[in-house]
Amino acid sequence: MVRCDTRNPPGDETAIVALLTDVLVGLGASPEVFEPAPGRTSLLATVTGAGPSPRPTLLINGHIDVVPVVEEDWTLPPFGGVVRDGRVYGRGACDMKGGIAAALEGLRACFDADLPPHCDVVFHLVADEETGGRWGTEALMNAGRISADAAIVPEPSELQVCVAERGVLLAEITVSGRAAHGSDPAVGHSAIADAARLVQALHEADFGGTVHPLLGSPTCNVGTIDGGTAPNIVASSCVLRVDRRILPGQTEHDAVAELNSLLDRLVPDVDRTLTVLAFAEASELVADHPFAELVGTAAETRRPVRGLFLGTDARFLRNQLGIPTVVYGPGSMTVAHSCDEYVEIAELAEAARTFATVFSRFGDRP
Image (cartoon, rainbow, N blue to C red; front, side):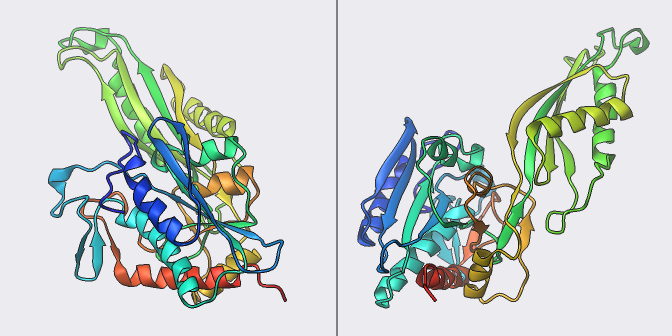
């Protein structure tokens, strides 16, 4: 899987379809390609369980796109799939082709042990998660193609069961000033100077509210700044791009209104406009949900459930579709998106055992 280049952007997942089709056919499925835009390919497949009808449905939702690479930063080929010192290296090894592989091999282990699941296992191996899911899980949801009794998203979670995640508002703030000759800056009004005040206000801001037990407090980071035309000209414009992490229950309107209100209060004299670049809701499943407990028991973990500060496609399943969903998989988000990305082979094996146990127990009748 790692050797299939599915970088997004530019966004084209077709390179991995033939490989995954062969694997799924080998598990008894008849895969279907879902392609809402050219090259934006998701693969859908159902592996029928052996229990009596009606059987419950367990969804495995995993994204097959990966983030771009800067090849000169890598010491190993980013799409080489190199196995060394107990690790698999390459872009996507951790995020999240390793998790998909563990789920597939866990199901294979059930059949090899002559213990087929008592549920139908549905795989949605989706496009476009790394840039928001528009052509992947969101497109499937809008087409009415998602239905399940429970779901696992095998993103890297350090083999812990995750039931909550923050949302994000990505915004662009344009600050306006007045140009003048750099030799007499007092004649103008520097947009860069005003932008600096905004940056300080945002990074030091206390957004208040109740601290979430799994997600902590909301945060804000100014990730890029771009302004001015020349060193001898007072800047008439400056653009900030902001990453604002939010907690469950907050809408896009809420997040924008809160950000504007805070800036109105802290830096009221700055001429600015805010444009939303992207928004993804936060989401959560109650920590003691029976499905979360089932996955935790299968993983043989005594650690409590945890939250993720970032977002995944689980939000569509939890928020819009009401499907009990956990995030569980091998690898760590501290390694995801990094150069020389890797996943530990021992974690792949442990995750596969957990998936095999979940598949064998989900749908059991008393």
